[in-house]
Image (tube, rainbow, N blue to C red; front, side):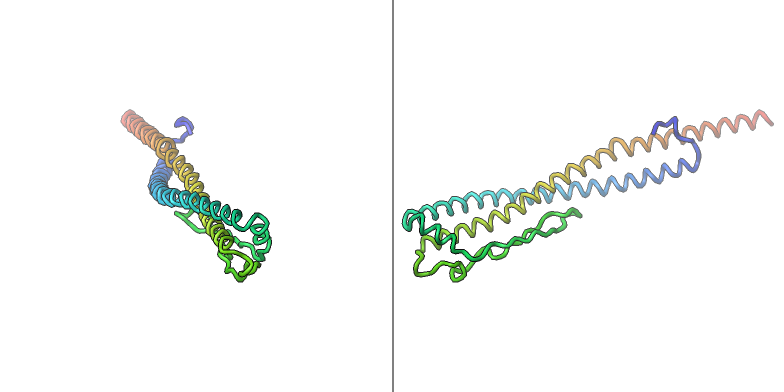
Length: 204
């Protein structure tokens, strides 16, 4: 608020001092949170880089093995094995806390399925199809983990931006504004005290 709208009293001055102290304390906490989030972000970013590399290599491996299975066994045999699958992956999305911020935690079940539970016969299906199946299971597990890491990285980045805006607002707007108001009230109180002293001298 403009200094002209402030009533220069001792109680107002005390209230301003309390607000300045509280704002500076909040500023320190928010700054520590921002720095902590940045450290977490770079750690997650390193994991994301490694995970992207894993996704690429697992995808290339899976596509190569499915291509070999199609070439050796034929398209119909590969599709028949795929349609025979009786179970589906089960994904549970939960959450965990990083610096007080909730980020997703993804748990996947039944990604890696034993050959006896896949619905197709061991004898009637070649090793090429089983290798392709395992390669795609690995790719799926990597994609689920990558999705968790990428989402965490995005949420961390958004939280860093919000925290930076709050830190900047406190540092460059809120605290300087309160300190200006404090200075104005102190100046007006000193001025009023001098005027009162002069009046008392004249009365004597």
